[in-house]
Every structure is written in structure tokens, then in C-alpha cells.
Image: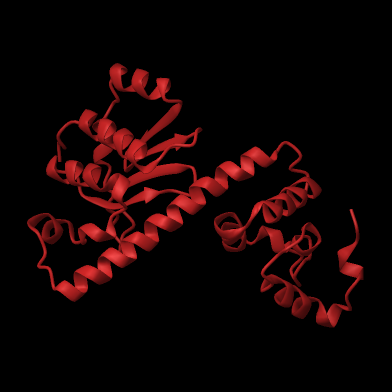
Length: 227
């Protein structure tokens, strides 16, 4: 690996790092630049998210070169393209949600009973998980967050007390049915249930309707809350 630290005088290393970070196209050499703390530019999670969301094929190839240069040799371009597929889907979802929210604000639409009770507008819930969140709240669960969890996972989690940090562990009484687990396995979906959250991991390229179908199948399997 090239010694990038020796190319730039110490006093201007951080300035060069910041300048390169704002470039529209980043090469593997750019991503291997280090800041004053010795951290790679390519280690910036927000930056990598931007590259996955907006980068073209050439940019994704440069990201692959960076990963190989930092000993992630098991990664192939298909892995990066898979991450990019969902990063772009998530971005499109959030843009559409923002437009829907602004349209609603202009129309001065009153809150529904669900929105009053849940403390959130329907437009603020990602569409693929929207009905699932409604289902869970109807069953007595108090959801706090939902939707994309990273790029290739989906999650719904329950309320947390901001003062004490105590979590709502109402899912501790939920044990997925054999029927659901078999159905998810056939779709190559991994399900993880914790006392305060339900997460599923995706291994194939699915569309929003398919993600919604999975959520609805899961939440239909969840029993009424015992709390």
C-alpha cells in the first residue's frame, strides 16, 4: 500500500483531507487519505452512504478498490451494487415522504385517530412498513421507529424512555410461528426478534411491495400485546 501520509506536509494534511472529501468523484487513492487522527476518508459512514446512493458504476468500482486495499478482499462488486440498490431505494422513499408531508401541510389535513395516538403523521412512516406499524399499534404495542435499518435490513422498535433509558420489552412474549419462519426462509429472509424490536435482513433485491408484504406477514403473526 502506498504511504499517503508522506505525500502531504503534516500541517496541511487535514486541509487536503477536507478538500478531497468534497470532490464529486472519489478515487480509491482519495478514499485512502487519512485525517489527523489517522482515520481513512473511506471510513466516513455518511460519505460512503452518499457514494452508494449517488455514485455511478465507476465510483462503485473505486469503492471496491478501496475496500480491497483495506483488507476487505472478500467483497465483490455485486456486494457493493446490492448495498447501492437499497441505499437508492431508501433515498427515493425519503424524498417521496418529504414531498407527501409538504403536500399535506399545504392542505392542512387534520390528524387521524391513529396519528393522535401514535404521535406521528402517517407520511412520516416509510410506506413499506406503514400498515405494519398501524397493525402493531392496534394490537397494543407502542412503536417508536421503523423502516430501513442500514441498507439491507428493516426494523420496527418499541418506545424508549428518554430519561431513564428503559425500553418497552413487549416483544419478549412473541415467538414467531413455524408457518411464518418457513415462509420467510423460502424468501431468503432472516428474522431477528428482540424484546424491544423486530428486524429482518434481506439477501436479495426486492421491491417496496415485497418488503411491505414481509412486514405485514410478520405483524399478522404477532399476538396482541400483554402489556
